[in-house]
Image (cartoon, rainbow, N blue to C red; front, side, top):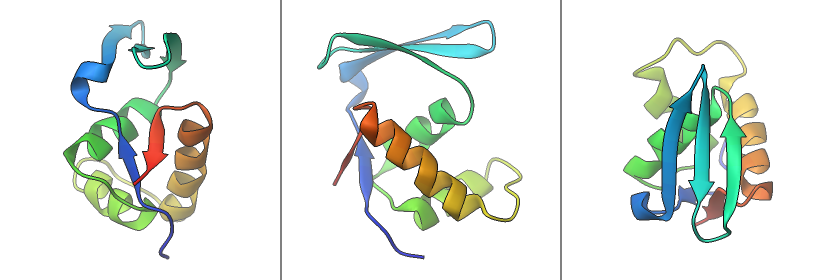
Length: 91
């Protein structure tokens, strides 16, 4: 499955704070604060390595996590949500 390639903001554009099983992310460009649950922080961490589509991102995450069937489709949906929130952009 090939789809849009996404990139995350540079590390200095966000401030990340772990908070009781969630991740608090302050997005400096927008001035917004987001509360993120897994897998959003892990997706953003993986995208920080290099831009990727859902398939390449699944390969990256599979090296660290046990991904089940349908991972590419699920990641494509999460990437769409992160794009709508302004936390990733199409490369």
